[in-house]
Image (cartoon, rainbow, N blue to C red; front, side):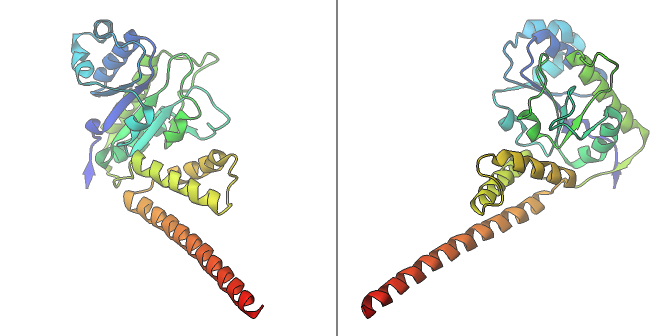
Length: 261
């Protein structure tokens, strides 16, 4: 079935925005492009009067419906697809896409999946730990000066998604695994891979990040995550069984040797 973009499934997430005026400007930019879902995480100052002053009356409903959360992981747990906006490149930020390419990608995903577009604090952006929750990263190309006002960045990405949704009807993508389901899988993978000595126990997150990037490209569904976790449980069971069988064999051997002596 072919459908248009589902704006109700796309949420703008602001992680630790420093200034309430910026939250208001973001709400106004969202309203301009037809977006209404806003989540604010751990804001040091959520002064509603200052927010509404920049949001104006037209975007007051975005502010009124917004959610305030204290923890990034919990806030993202129910989303099926998370996009991180970054101005910095290199290091762990090797694979990034432009807003226009992101928009084309998100239109079909939005039909059946909840999408979060994550923006970091104005002064430092998203940390390396923050981007671990992201399926993909988006970078807004600029000239020599790469720093954008928060609401400008939100406006550019929302505009690209809005215009991509106008171009043509798009075949919807299947429902993907939620962030909560993926994080449970990664925790289980890290535990089992450390115990079978596949990854270095002193720095397991370095190796798990490679797996995160690999699985993010696959866009796993909930059933596929369940299969991977089932394999991990079977490996865990078999490892314990082999250990217990070895212990019993050692005890039996010791008993026979004692009797012979």
